[in-house]
Amino acid sequence: MDTNTFYKTTEQYVTGLFTSNNKPELAFHNLEHTKSVVQHTKEIAGHYYLSENDLLVVFVAAWFHDTGYLFTDPQHHEEKSVELMKTFMQTYSTDQETVQKIEQCIIATRPPVTHASLAEQIICDADTYHFGTKEFKDTNQKVWQEYKNTGAILTEKEWITTTIDLLNTHRFYTKYCMDLLDKRKQKNMKKLKKKIEFPGDEDESLSIDHVTKDKAGLVSKGIQTMLRMTSNNHLRLSYMADHKANLLISVNAIIISVMLSIVFRKLEEVPYLTVPTIIFLLVAVTTIVIAIIATRPKLGNGNFAKQDIIDKKTNLLFFGNFHKASYEQYDEAMRAMMQDPDYLYGSLIKDIYALGTVLGRKYKLIRLAYNIFMVGIIISVITFALAYFFFRGTNPAAVTQGGGSPF
Image (tube, rainbow, N blue to C red; front, top):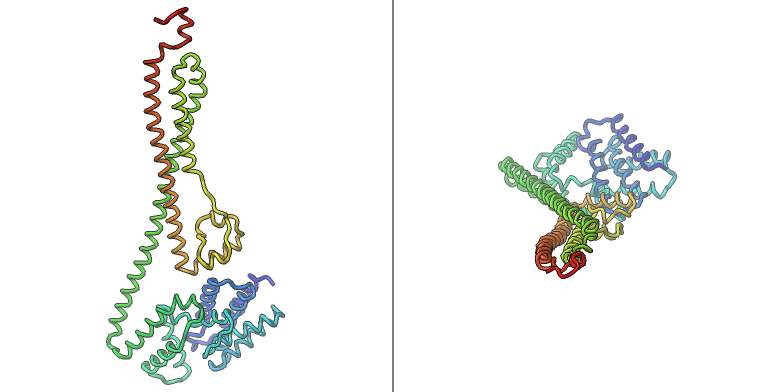
């Protein structure tokens, strides 16, 4: 079975069911909600290492879990959803174990929730994901509207009380959703309780909430901007360091070339310049070596294990940690990291820190190279001057050519 084709076929089939059997009274349990559950299923599943078969199970269950609403009453929609799923799967799969797992996931969405497997936990959390989001107020209004469309008579206060009871008994099962959504769910509950106790304060509370959201958004954008600017500044500093090192290497390479090709051939005629020349040559060579060490690239082992991702030990933003890994392994690891804000921001922080430590070492070596070059040139020039003024008269060639004492 081609998985990608099967996923697309499943999406088209369920979308067709909702389109051809449209029920306007389904204000919440409609195609929009189904797509939302599918998206949240992908998000939660991406945080865990599921097998290819388990990914297929949660994907199909997410698409079919509410299709029963199109053909039967809400109390029995799970059984009808399973029936529709089995009819669909007869065409594409004979694996009864997979079909049974999908059935268990769909049935698990019925309260009270039973959750024997991780796949069932993921579907349950995806189905109630909105409990812990800022969109909960809108989704809860849609559920109430849908409930009223069935002919039920329930006041707003009664509905809010029922919703509070639901949120009190509800729980998220995956650690990912617990960490991500529980806090917001508690906020949503407090708002509902406050609406019952102080009905007139709703507008004020909403206004305050909007201000809080705006501030939270600004803080989040500020953090992203800070990390991006810091990373860019480090990259610019690294480029400047490489440019400085390249300048040292180029200048000293020219000096060495000139000395080897011209000065060394003249030393027989002016031997008193031998020591200054050697000093100058050693300074140039030392400067080049240090500049090369400063800019020499360093690679990691280029691979990582699944446990490294689980423990959040590998920084996937640095190529040295993954250049030997397969694309499938890297893609899976990156998706897991992107679904975990702490891991993602932690990797960005590690990347900035690593850039900083490399820059510290690089600038330290380049500073050393410049100091050696500066001091070496001064010493070499002084040595050349001393040799010229104090030792040029001892030139053996001059003595031989003159036939006697130079004096």
